[in-house]
Structures are given as C-alpha cells and as structure tokens.
Image (tube, rainbow, N blue to C red; front, top):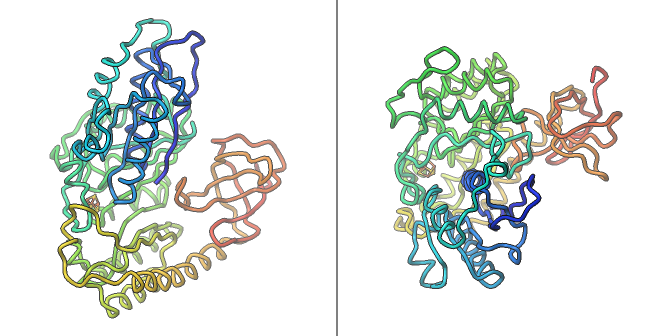
Length: 454
Ligand code: SF4
C-alpha cells in the first residue's frame, strides 16, 4: 500500500481555490485520485502540495485489509489535525459510520469512484472560480504516475466471491467501461506522451461480461468489449501494453498470440492464490492447477519469453501441511517469474473468517519463509539466465548515484524489479526505450550496459 500527497505540475501563476489530496491504496485507487485531480484542474482549482496551503483536503482511502483501514483512519486524523476541512472518499468511504464515529467533524464521506460526489462536496466548501483560460487540462489528464506510464482502469467491481475478499462488497459487481471510452482514454494518454499502459481492474479477463461484450466502432472497425479485442486494439497504439489482475479463465489463452505478435507485452499478472484443490475450494476459486501447469507450458511454447507474475496466500484457514507441500511442489513445477506471497490475514466482513481450522501465526510465518525460500531460488535462476542477453527496456528515472533505473517487459512498475544501467554512455531520458545488455543479476534487479546499437 502506498501513500502519496499529490503535487501535479501547475501551469497557472495566479492563485485559485486550493485543494489538497492524500492518495492511499492500490493502483486502482490511484486512478480514482487521478480522475479527481483531472476534474479539479478542469474546474480551475489549484492543487496544494501541503495541508497548510489547502482550503480543503480530500483523503482517498483504502479499505482492503485491516492494516490498510488503520492507515486510512490515521491519514484522516492527520488531515483533520493539520487542516481541519476534510472530505473522505475511496474504499473506506463505503463504511461512513466507521469514519464518522471516530471523526464526526469530517465534512463529507463518499464511497469509491464517486467522483461527482467528491466534486460537489468540494464545491460546497470552496466554490470553483471559472476562468476559461486556466480551466483547461491536457487531454491526457493530470497523472500522479510518471508521465511515461499510466494506469488504464477498464472496469470496477467483481462478479467473483473469493471467500477472503470483501472487494465485491465494497465495490459491487463488475461494471465495465464501454470499449470506445476506454480506447479514447488510452489514445489520449499515448498522444500525451504515455509509452506504457497498465491495464487494471479487479478482474481484467471478465471485461465486458456485464455489457454482454457490446461493441463500438474505433478507428473504423467494430471492437467488442472483451479482453481480447481490447488488448488487440490497445496494441495498435504503439505503446507497451501490460495486463494486470487477470483471472485464469480459459479465454486468457487468446491473448497469447497478441504477445507472440508483439502487440501486448509478454507479461501476465495472474493471482493463483494457492495450488491445493481443497484450499482453492475453500477460497471459492477455480481448482484445477494441474491444468494450469499445462497451460503455462503451452504459453511458454508460443511465447518463450513470457513473464508470469502471481500472488499466493499461505496460512489460509484449514490449510494443512499436506496442502502447503502441494503448493511448494506446484511452485517448483510452475517456475513463475515474479511472485508475491501474503500470510493470510482475516479481513473484517470476509466469509473466510468463519471457516474452521485457523492456522497459528507461527505456522503461517514458518510457511511463508519456506515459500519465499523456494520462490527466491526460482526467481534468481530466472534472472541469472538473462545475463548476457540484450533486452529492450524503458527508462523510468535517472538517479544521480545509481544511474538509469529501467524496466524490461518482465517488470511492472512498483511491484517487480529493475534493470539498472549504472554508467550510461549517453544521456537517457525517462520514457525512452533502449536496449541493454545484461552483465549481472542481483536478487531482484539486473545490471547492464547500453547495447551498441542505441
Ligand atoms: S477475483 Fe479478486 S476482487 Fe474478485 S472477489 Fe476474488 S480476490 Fe476479490
């Protein structure tokens, strides 16, 4: 979970009403913050980089885990202390009583993606000042992420009911954005300088199910609201396209040819969560991990360089040593590139809390350590295998001490590793795509030099 105070570029010299924004949570929440910022700028508000200069502060909260709720409540308290005028939005806003009980002086509470309600709360505290010359925003909107990559949110909510998750309760069932709207936003982003689009949602592979895959015309052709059509159309924009939060449905196989053609990055972020059929059943997730191994093999046959990222939960209620060993064996076979592992944490309101067989904390810890040891060996061997190869990378930032911090197709920003060019032989700019020959592999990162042809 990340917390950032927004300081977007200001192109206006005169003082307008000022709004502060504290953004907490996952990339999906960041997209909400970006939308609020875009709208504020569109209406002529300035963004305050600190509490003291703000006429009102919007706190965009996260409510996924108990620890995230606590951090959100703390951020609200801090904003009230420092400024006094606070509007709360985001996932925690779905439970207004919880917030108002602790902080009755909060001015308004809205749930996630209620941008209009946030705006009308802002209007009430500090009305906008209309000036057609300064109310303009770039077509790409105001980004909180570096200019060269952007998150593209394609839907809200989720139709699954995984027993450990309260997102469907907080965000509701799947609501997809129309395909032409998503593609127009992506086009604007790319025209505004974005070189990498990170497709996000709660469940990217379900995109368009609620719309019955209703199509729309874009660039002279009919496109369905469907993951495959969306990925293909995004691939025409000339930017890197990275798919996150893909649920392992069979039709995921259909995006593999797009990866083979180079239209979509050969990267799939699929949270498998476990491998034991018993645990998966208790999680209410699809349970045929044998079949998943066959699919992984088929994907690698078609796209040998595909990078698979996944997340797992250890210590889920009822997980036996046998279940856990099965998970470790599966992990060794699956040879995933990037893996995150969470110790099971009870989330208020999640059905899994009522399951029998709670795993003691020390067992969770011990399993987590064993899991990480197995995966670390796999990930390191995968990184070692890249030594001597030349990779295409995107430059994220230039650090005066560390050199150019870049990423290959196998690395999503913030969550995966980096490719570091310690002493670039020429000046590089963030967003530039260059070729790097790998000299050395670290635990998470690769180190290399610019390839001759750059
Ligand atoms: S698919 Fe993801 S968002 Fe949906 S219920 Fe399961 S864990 Fe939650």
